[in-house]
Image (cartoon, rainbow, N blue to C red):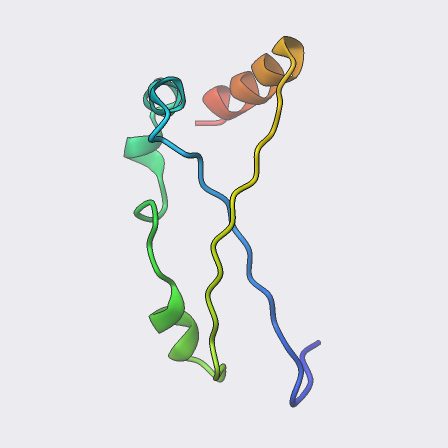
Length: 82
């Protein structure tokens, strides 16, 4: 429930496809075909069209180290869910 004067945080993540193997992985997962929005899209206008004001946008990096098994588990789930 949102209350007057409260705050709403909206987060999403994107792969850094400036790294060649990450871009290749995205292609293998057919991400360019199924992505729901353009990478780097600014959703500020969408949020501002509703009851929200004083919208701020922040961008930060997160790095994740994958072990082989975990990487393949995640990749296979995403690749077969299409």
